[in-house]
Length: 69
Image (cartoon, rainbow, N blue to C red; front, side, top):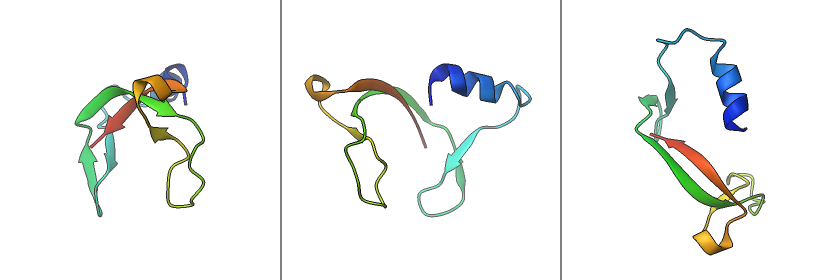
């Protein structure tokens, strides 16, 4: 998802609606981290891993925005 796609999706909701992320084990948490992160795209194939992974700056495919708990 790109920033443009995220903004368009968020425009569908009231501006004062809370945004949350999954908790570590259960429940939900408020967003506490918004940062840029160098990533390699589509490098993981295991079902339990996300397809993209963090990497060193000189190995990156892209710079992404990470939103975390």
